Image (cartoon, rainbow, N blue to C red; front, side, top):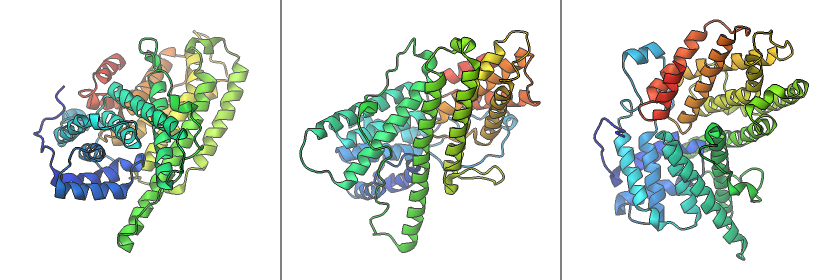
Length: 432
């Protein structure tokens, strides 16, 4: 598949510092498993001596690939109609795509240099991140799986060795563990609909004994100016607030999945409604408590014109949690036939639809923003659209006004990204 309409600048050592700077600003803040100071030093060394053929060069080149492909977070004022009139799409709007691919291919050529080391696990993890950025979910899943396997082998081998580990290495290992585990578990649930055709087993990392939260690394080596160090540490702190909130939110999602999604959806129709509502109310309280404990610096405020990607991503996690929580009740309502909706579950049904509308309205501002969760966001939007249409066709459910506009937002989002991901094209056609 052609992934660029422009020529590649190729792999150039002189561009490494600039690309690493972009990587740290746009990508690393969401998965802080690299040592930023090391990357900066390696980039400077690459300018002087070339990338070379070492295991570190794999990490450096993968970071450069992500630096070339990623972009700063911006709220767009364009409407779905504007995008349609401009015939805009994700490939045409990513001029550095071919350059990013050149760096990515260069990393793959060095893959044989890696063993069962932390560097190998880091590289494989960020290969998965790059593949998610470029909407190649199955390749990404393979990379995340391999990262989990390498880290598992590394951890098992380490347990048989004597001697203590450096605190910095321990911190890196913990961060890598949580990044790998949450990425693979999130991926597995998202594709649960096709597990009958493509079995996706859980990660073996879940059986290892790691602390409940990763240890924080050192934010700076003290070689920067006081002002630069202050800015770096502020960004470092926000990144870690986001990272830890994401891990905590993932655990809340796991509780919801364990409560409602361990069985086939048709089982909901014969389940004890009173019990389901009690469980939902308890989980609803847990979600609300998680929201209340999100640090202010990464909390999304609806009344403020936000331009902070970390806060925006956590807001997306909120919508995802509520979608998981309320969808069973909409499913029951839709399958209730021509009779009236059970008044006891109607509040949950209305919350489900309100959540769908809120999520689609929020996504219209970021249709063009590429990030590691773009494919997941498209699937969640598709779910929103299908739930809204199901409620409309049911006739007995009170659907808020303006639902056709919400469907158009979903269609516009899928249309923008479908040239990179054929499954999104099929999703759009099914929705229309």
